[in-house]
Amino acid sequence: MKKSLVLSLLLLAPAWPVRAATGSDSSIVVKTIAEVETKVDDTDQVKREPARKVAPGGAVIYTISASNTGSKPATDVVVTDPIPEHMDYVDGSASSEGARVTYSVDGGKTFAAKEKLQVRGKDGMTRAASATDFTHIRWQFEKPLAPGESRVVQFRARVE
Amino acid sequence: MPRVLADPRSGCARGAWLVVFLLTASHAWAVGTPAGTPVANTATATYSVGGSGSFSASATTTFVVDEIVNVVVTLQSVSPVSVSSPDTNRLLAFMVSNTGNGSEKFSLLLNAALAGDQFDPTNPRLFLDSNATTVYEPGVDPPYQPGVNDPVIPADGSRWVFALCDVPSALANGNLGDASLTATSTKGTGTGTIIAGGGVGGGDAVIGASGGKSTSLGGYLVTNLAVSVVKSATVADLGGGTTPSPGATITYTLTVSVAGTGSVANLVITDPLPPSTSYVASSLHLNGAALSDAADADAGDVGGTTPNQVTVALGSVAGGSLPQTITFAVTIN
Image (cartoon, rainbow over all chains, first blue to last red):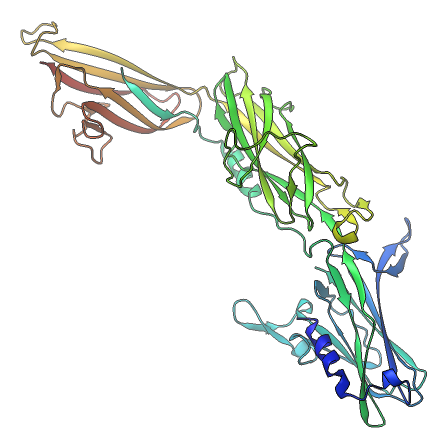
């Protein structure tokens, strides 16, 4: 389910003028890295390392950067990341600086503020959505992304 | 001769043991995502430049889910098992459950030489449930051979293991002999131990909260349950004497005693009527109270359950309880 939006967006992609491929006026390059925190020897310090192997229950920090490599400002920049399959979003972990953060509980069809989301429980009753119900996170940048500018968003998720 | 049908193996369990059994019998579920599962993530962005929309997607990042090693052993028999002294091939059944997220191989150890009990069960042997019947089948379930047929149990799966022990002779009633089964992951032990690359699909194997091993305890309780039936007869002849001549009435008394600790279940006493005699109608009594001759709601019958036979069902009888008496009369033909 969580992959469905990505796939559908990829399928829809040709409907947009895909300038990323042409490299002309403007293009935003999206990069995502997954990291884990490990303790530095016996100290209280932690360091981040690329996530290659993670145990169930382990937290992964996803950092997504959007860089405008074009020559014109990009407006209405919206970054979307699905909560990966087999993972639960860590409540409150999404960065929100300079962006409006909304969440989806329906596989990315609709997005809303966290407190407005509802899901139907196993008993058939609707209830307020919890962090583990989230399927996608969306960041709507408040300001245009100027040429050469990069912005970074982040969230954590835990392996089920 | 009177015949005794009983199940002397079904001694009652002591309360505390039963509670422990119930508390540990609940199934513990494995942790999360299967080991080796790749977890992929791709971020996307939409934006506008000069009024027209664009779309970008990141490269996909992927990591592999590590293997968590966890195991739980739970006793399945109602313990302690009631035994005699001596006794042979007494069963304690255990279930080994893989509560990790990957398939694991476990080595097994049955320890009958434990401290804190009154005797050590002898000749401890382990057998593996070969066909998921959860019932020990001699000759079908193979003996466990360490390092040869260590059970491989899938994530969230479980395997029944049967422990058989003998009981030494000359033990007193109430003596307890414990035996424990330990299952140890062949990947390693010690919570937090990481076996780099040891997991399914290239991930690490991590020893979980169980420390990679688990032990469950069972026990044997010497009850020496023994059922004895003593039969006596009094004769009353037609002349007021005690000569067993034709027409004389013979009154039989069966005295049933249960010795030992615990109780026997479903104790049924049967006694064939002697040849060349006729049963005296309505003469069957249990502990002085009349029983009907028909096979019905009361405890006994004559000829109803089996032709020409007295049958009295005493049910569950506790060891050391007062003897019970069965009386009936016949006339000599």
